[in-house]
Length: 316
Image (cartoon, rainbow, N blue to C red; front, side):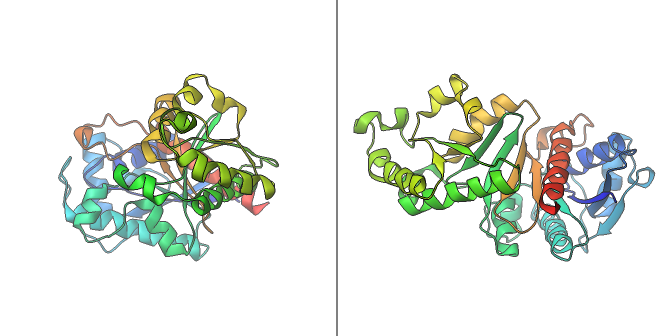
């Protein structure tokens, strides 16, 4: 029986609907998957005019939300944010109800959903709140899995938000994810320090000595194979990530900047720690090229493949 994958349309003014259409065209003969598209038909029709790919000509099931939106390519608007999040909400419900096996979310604009009244930093936190899970952002590419100790958070708040318990909790979530979702029986995890050179023995910051090392000791006592805090620059520059099954970065850009530089459009955002399977491409709405027909569906395709893999692995 084909796996049922829900795909949300993303921000209607961005490239989300375009890459969904292109992906459906590329996968039209894939017998392994049934695509359930969640969004607004008129939005896809508008993008079809720009791309030459019509939803009506593609194999799919359409679950249409109640939203109405007039597409204005490349424009930030509360209407677009509301429309995008209603599609996400419906896809979550489909997962919870067992109507689909996994969900893949096309890019949204965090500013647009904020203007629409959604008080969440992004997809990850919203989906975790709706499902009652403790979501952990894990960026996945061949030979590289990077999780974030702190997610969508202003940099000025990062250091004060990290304590020993948070490191232990996030590391255990990552270890559980590697075992249950990726089949790594005894995962080895790298922990990246907060400060330059991981504090350089306390000269450049004391968090590694005061907070990180005690957390590592606790993790070792619980059977988690976690490294001491490592300097992030040398870690990625020397390709040390190849020696580990997963990486726990201290903050957003520390993990995602090197990840995106290394993944070359093959990256996927996976939300660990949830009862449902959710992935997304590793790029944003790309308002600058919306409506031009030039957006690549490669990362969306990788997100679909990972969602199908994890859903299959969990069902074994």
